Image (cartoon, rainbow, N blue to C red):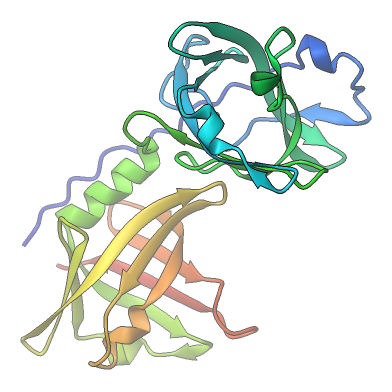
Length: 273
């Protein structure tokens, strides 16, 4: 049996960044700076100099994909609101800020002294996703921008703690409502063992079945995806991209909000005694 080794969950402090010079015309009535769930800088560092470096994975401008033009350019976002575009031979400083405009989350990006290639990314972008490892944006003209980190992907402290809990424990079903129906008793004899390499093993009546699992982060929180290939029933009832509502040192509360309307599913798994 695995032992419980859940690290204390440390909430990452996120810096709220002030309006930059190029947005001086924005008023309090139209723009309110807020703390994004994930900064484009370094979410693990409270330092203003903390940073992350990205590359453009997709930039569709006027209907044409432009990513190949940016293959040698890196974009370093610092916690203090500075962004630096750099090629092998030159750098162009700019400013960035995530805030609200008319109730919509926006990325404000500006490269005032950069050539057209760099300045093409300047402007006000609507936030599609502030996923730590795949931020996505769109502007009013319909242009789209996606960036990915150049180094190793970043995992929040909360996700690190959840992964450690999953890997260090064997779980049983404490409460399970599937598409509006209480199926807890059907799963009462099932244990779930989350292992490395995204393998999950379910055991029931001495029989073991393998499946896959993974965790991911979006701007709305953490998602735990579980997949068992049919047959056997009832294990396929676990198959979903579960929103992690909460977790403690003994249990994980999950919810599937993408199921049939008005018949949502939720699942609570606890450590096996």
